[in-house]
Length: 214
Ligand SMILES: [Fe+2]
Image (cartoon, rainbow, N blue to C red; front, side):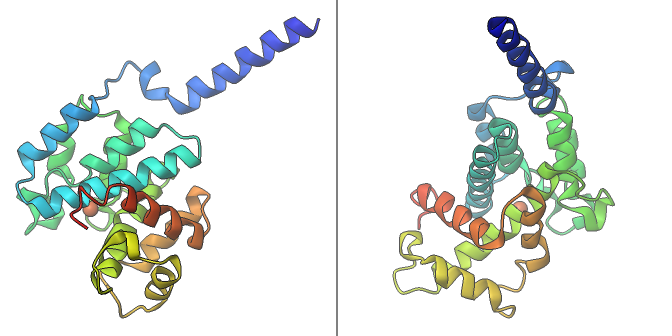
């Protein structure tokens, strides 16, 4: 009796996990390997700073996914590839993410492509409506804030950034104003309190500090 109950419970859990976490797989969609994704990114993004920004957003997205038991690979690759067309669209923001969607067709599950389009919602009109969409918007904005905070301390090293300094810089709306606080606040819709999200983001970037030359 106990065994059959356990089997049913396990199958139910597996059903939920597969259905809600890996629905792209069930739909027969493909997801590019991480090494290929990085090569693809470097093919399109020639500016090293843009590549480093992509790596930063990826690192934050992976940390968020891991902590909230989401699909880490999907969230990470969505972060890594979110600005893949930036070299072509820097001066035409209305096209940003539209070209990315074409590049990534068949390489990234549809929800990843939609999240990428939603992070440019001011121009695409696709609003960030789910956790992945909102995580990308928040991670994109907070990555800039963390980097900007590191750059104003004497060592300019991520390892030396203190969480309280980051929080103070977050509260100072005149500091790194392009890192829109409204976008960072979307972390709340992904299950993270603001201070926790800042800490997660800082930790994520400290782990890849060598790749960011910081
Ligand atoms: Fe970005």
